[in-house]
Length: 425
Image (cartoon, rainbow, N blue to C red; front, side, top):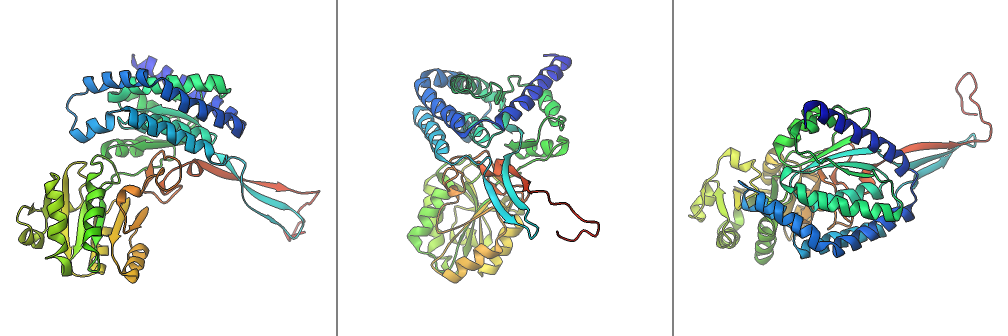
């Protein structure tokens, strides 16, 4: 496409999204649920078509790391997980129109705070095609129109998914443009959308730090984001050894290339000679490189010396940084300094330590005696998520259905008027 054609193309997508968003605000919960049900069924019945498209993407991908290829790859098990997530979202109550709170004023006015859709969401994300139906489902269920712009490596998979979702929309009676995919991989298209503050309500970027910083720099509308996910596991002096090993290994190794995988380990010095060798030994056996502080390297000779850069790094790879501390307070200070405010976990048998950690660590999710991998919309009961926000406004943590709504006030009266001195009548 030429620059002019890209601009015209993006403008057309944006205008159709605005029209669809108005229609979506009026669509019944029954229609949205029918679309979700049909989408789940069609993903299963069109599995071969979707997997063939994904195979073309994987074969064409060059220069990707093993975790990046894993994020790109679809299989029947992952498709089953996607259709299952859509069915779970179907079961959630329709958030649109829900009364958040209400009151009756002394003058008889009834004031309601009512949940409404955001409008048009521009979602730009990495080459993880499973995100495409998840994001579409959350946006539709919450009454929004969405413009999807996935990574170029997954273009064929994304097209296949959106074709299936569009087929379900036609059958269910959903607005045809409620879910649109940006079908050009030209980076200039992103810039065009980021300038459409008159059409797009909010942009949600999900991907590498470079992408996030570009979006934050160029977007002329609000952005819900997280820059990185340097997630920590802190092993307290009272930690059970077996629990420390299993939780740390799962947090790091269950899936390396995701934002809620542990990248940093912090451990109390009182268990330096017992727990640390067991935990690092198991990580080492699984191929994880250990980059440790001086005390870590003394106890675990396979470790290489860590730098300050390592302590703040999101590796997305089989590497972990390790810091030994002498108190829970030192651990909290270290984590709050190097954290990206995403997910932190403590392993402890001390309730007071757990309470101190959860109250003082400033991240979107703080986990006690469980894997960091549970900071995930599906795992905490949201059905799925469009991303995990490390912001505090307007949403924080996994962004599910409710996080993609806002509210308006509806005021019911029977003729009340304000008098000149502004007193309540």
